[in-house]
Image (tube, rainbow, N blue to C red; front, side, top):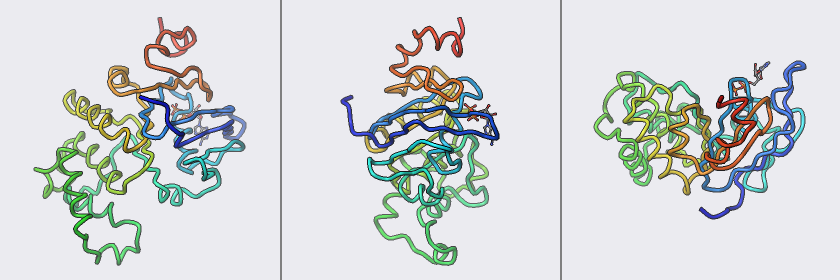
Length: 248
Ligand code: ADP
């Protein structure tokens, strides 16, 4: 994969929670269309990093430049989401009482007033988009089932679908394969490989087998800093990474 322009450039990000330094001068670039995995022990700052990018946490200092032009620090989470940055938390949050297709429709229409959302009809292009995503996520046969009846893995796929209908540029995913069966994990890996290129992805993950199957490049966080960066092979051979994370 050739080097591309950065979609996200984090520079010297500092986050301090009441005297506790969660991120220290964190500098990190993600390329357009890249699939980046972020790994590191508990408490390393992975969640805080995603919170900074999505506007949930405001850093004390540093810059987060999106698409080489928009400074994200200081923006509200809703503004950042509207700029095409989607986030998936570890636990799926789908509307369980709605069907699969209704969840996707709602996600597609959601940036309008509630009443307008309820009244809106999808245009042909939007309907095609939903069909495409139902197929991509292998939820076609489930389209009229209530989401609450889906398996855990299917709920995860549905939530990824709800992000995808909004056509994000950058997707942040927190342990997407957690709780999935082996077959679902394998399909998630395949799906991410398909999404990369068209979207940029940042995936926080603990499952090294999964990381190995998906990542172009891995960033290892430790104590709020980048400890190592490179291919999985490279970071796995890094002495410091072995000491603090992988163990001997
Ligand atoms: P990770 O996701 O890598 O496990 P986190 O980003 O959740 O790490 O946390 C990094 C550190 O910051 C942890 O030590 C955590 O306890 C601390 N931390 C996170 N959020 C807060 C907060 N709101 N207030 C105080 N400390 C926090």
